[in-house]
Amino acid sequence: MILKLSKRNFLIVCFTFLFSCISFANDDSAVEEKPAFNINETIFGHIGDNHDWHMWDYNGHTVGFPLPVILVNTNPFSIDVFMSSEFEHGHKTVTKGDHTYKMVAKEMGGQDIFYVENGEVTDKGPLDFSITKNVFTLFLVAIIMLVMFIGCARAYKRRPGQAPKGFQAWLEPVILFIKEDVIEPNLGRHADKYTPYLLTVFFFIWISNMMGLIPFFPGSANLTGNIAVTFVLAAFTLLITNFSGNKEYWKDIFCMPGLPWPLIPIMAVVEVIGIFTKPFALMIRLFANITAGHIIVLSLTSLIFIFGTLAIAPVSVFFVMFMDVLELFVAALQAYIFTMLSALFIGLAMPEGHEA
Image 1 (cartoon, helix red, strand yellow):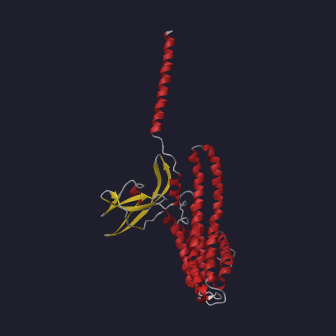
Image 2: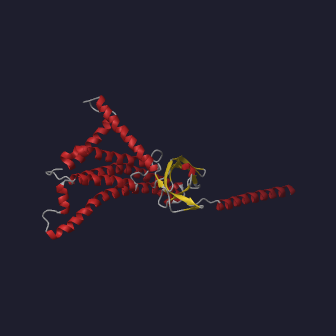
């Protein structure tokens, strides 16, 4: 009897101890519960520009590599160069000479660097010429294009008059398609003059879009989804269009023939506005389409973390793969549309039959 009671008591003690441990663990998990998944932070952190290249998180630590920070101060004048790792992802301030800096994350993605005075972050900052994620990708795309075109040019010199081989055989049909089906129909006899610019724009946008679809280094940068990049591309088209315009082009803008004279001032205002709205549409179209694609893919991927279960994973992965295939088409399509409309706008500034 004593033995039975001892066994019973032993089992009761063990069960009580086990239950206490489980309860204690549950209490700890409640205290140390991880914060809810923030989809806005994930999405905007990706589509925004950054001073470092974040790859993944491991045991609460960020895995990636820093990029150079280049800050220019005007009062007093100084240039400070250091690596973004000194900020420790915005957790620390950095002091260089007479200035102390703090990296602050923006709500819509990206980071800004401000001065710290008397222990407080001010609303003023230095001129930031840092090599950010988008700038790094910009240089990388430029290097890829140089290698592509210089390699093809050398291949033509080594094998003149022969059929293209290798990478040259892939690149030549693309160049001929853009030149013969996009540039020449819109520019006519002026095609050769503007072919270098239009081909450069096409391949720059296409390669940048493709780099953005690669989910790991050296891809994943949202270069053409940055409004500053699309603004510069549209500004080049605007300047080339208007500096290439002949007298008939400007005459049609300020004194459109065939109109009653009371309508001429009204139409002149409309045409002047149109000079800027056409490249503005180029800028917004490229920016919006590329950014929307990144947001959709990230949103579909985030469904797994939002629902907190692997049961949704097959659905999420299926739609992500479908969107990625679609984005491959969109990457080329947006480059084609930007190039075609740029050629069209330049061609409209040089009506056939008039001197350029």
